[in-house]
Image (cartoon, rainbow, N blue to C red; front, side):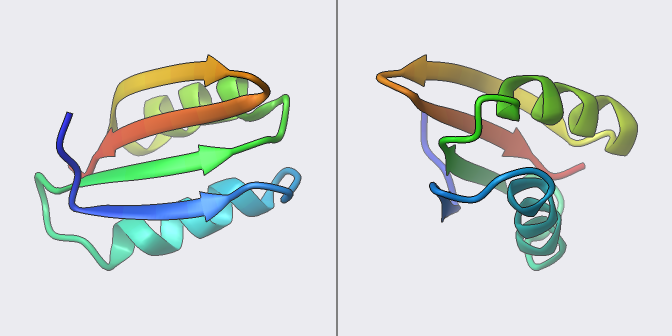
Length: 75
């Protein structure tokens, strides 16, 4: 899937991946897609909750080899 911006939050623990995601989404316009790469084991749960609470669509979440990749569409 195509995305407009990517941020790398590998090595950061909660709540930093979410805070950096929030900041990056604020810099995008509605409908643009952000790709986030994280290594925090709680990221899967955190990003699902973040999506529900903020209304930004969680388009994709995947885990491969200890890395988590999320695609979010700004509302």
